[in-house]
Image (cartoon, rainbow, N blue to C red; front, side, top):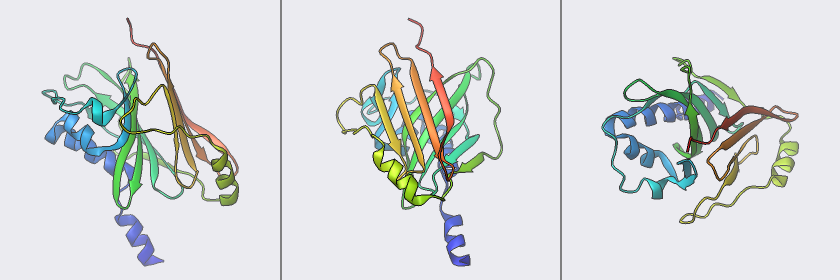
Amino acid sequence: MIFALLIAASVPTAVDAERAFARDAQRIGQWTAFRKYAAPTAVMFTPQAVWVQQFLKGRKDPPAALTWSPAESYVSCDGRTAINKGPWTSASGKAHGYFTTVWMRKGGAWTWTYDGGDGLDTPMPARARAIVRRASCAGGRTVRALARRAVSAAQVAGKPPGDAGTGRSADGTLSYQWKVDPKGARHFQAQLWTGRHYQTVLEQQTTAPAQ
C-alpha cells in the first residue's frame, strides 16, 4: 500500500501540467506552448471551434504571453481526466478573465483537449494552491452503465470540429460538453460523479463577440 501511494504521489497532476504549461508560455512562447501541450484533436475557439494543431501551425508567438494559473481542478475517480479553471491576465495587465482547460493523461503525460474561457470585468482571484475536487469511486457498476448510454461526438483529425462536442473520462466519472452557436456564443458544462448521481460542477456561458 505504501509503495502504491508513493507511485501515485510521483505522477504529475493536471494542476502540475497546467502550471508547467503556463511557465512554458513565458519561456518558449505562447503559441509554441499551446502546441506543445495540445492533443492532436484539441479544440479552441476563435470564436468558432478550430483544431488547435491546424490553427496554430506556423503561427508566430506574440511578443509577450498571457499569464494564468489553476484555481480549481475537477478530477475523475481514476485520476486520468481533469478540468482546470482559473484566472488569466494579458501581458499588459490591462485585460483579465478566466480559462477552462480539459486535460487527459496517458501514462505520466498530460495533454489538453479543450481550451475555453472569457474575459471578466473584475479579475478572478488567484490561489497559491488550487482547490481539487475528485469524483467518487463508489457505484462503479452504475456509473459504467450510465457512461455507456452517453452520446459522445466523434472528432476526426483533419476535419472541422463543428459546433458541438462531448467527452468523458475512461471510467465515466467526469464528463463535459460544449456547444457554440453561429455568432460565437458558447456554452460549456461539466459533471462529476458523486457516488449516486452526476452533479454539475461547471456551467459557463460565453457571449458572442461584438460585431
